[in-house]
Length: 460
Ligand code: BGC
Image (cartoon, rainbow, N blue to C red; front, top):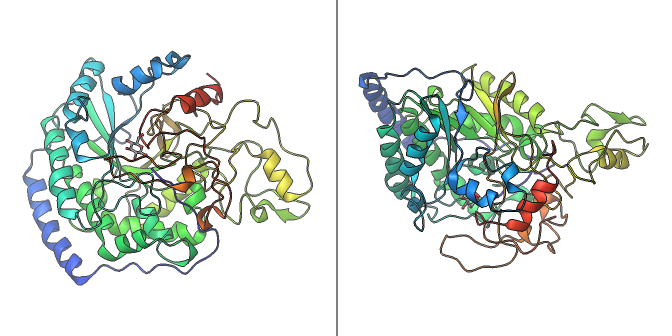
């Protein structure tokens, strides 16, 4: 995963264009889709919030890794998401569980009661275009393989379970992809790979295809990835992102009815709520928005961002009952470095730095952050408009290798995972804040897991 960051300064809005060809395709597929959806016997009605009144699947593979760590049994029975991060993961990698195995295990855990099965759909062509740590197996142009070898087989398997009235499948659709199209295609934060993905349209084609096909399954609840406050919280990114999401969710056969909601902070470290300062605070007449840390952002935490973004999405045309998820797996920031109150400093930078519980060196840092802790335990409906706090990134799984490691997973080496790296325009040239000795993204990182336990907030 990579969380790439905010272009903190205003920039010209990207024009969202849908080519004539794509338009024609959307029309054709849209018609076909409606026809088949009308004919399909939908025995189940979706509930408004799938997490309400349901348990959430505990992935036995993650649970075993957590339980094997000293102190890990305190959290080993928390639900975490299953990541389909490559075609082979559908059947199971290296003898591990595949999608159908997990679904069977989920139904067993359910014991005849409702259960949410959380699954991350993560294999777009040209994946992770603004970073290297989670580049994937499919090249920028391999949209056909994405559709026929990744999404279609997932849909086939999920369809076999579609009539089970206890199973609610919450999908997290393609982390980082659409936000990267907003912030990393022009200006100093641009990358060549993101420009390629904007030009070939394959992020939008892939996401809309996934939403449409998955959305046809009556017990699937699609949540689209919506970055985080420290990425899309500036007004230069906020409205354009919502527009891009709407455009994508209504093209190529997808409709707003295929979308249950959005998720923020996936695999990131930004807090839910800053308890000791607010974006409206001023110090000596200077707004905290002018501090280096806030840097003119309109948000300082994810829950306020998620709720405001929800309103924006509804005003753009998404259904008014959409719900938000927040990934709270690693945004806890407890431990001895946690501030205990509001700073009394009169300098705005000191005030913010002493008051903030997020101890990162920059809100744009995303890889294996030193000092982070487990966040809120998974919770259904913690606030109006928030469907759940969820642990989507399984705590203890690395964000990326801290040095180059040859591999056959398509993963590159991103300097943002190297503790000695001095940064780039996407984190305004701050050190990466990453832990050393980290394995490839997705691989077990025991030292990080230990730190997450020690710095959990709320404490364990
Ligand atoms: C990796 C995936 C992994 C996921 C969950 C991502 O950063 O690229 O391979 O499944 O994290 O740990």
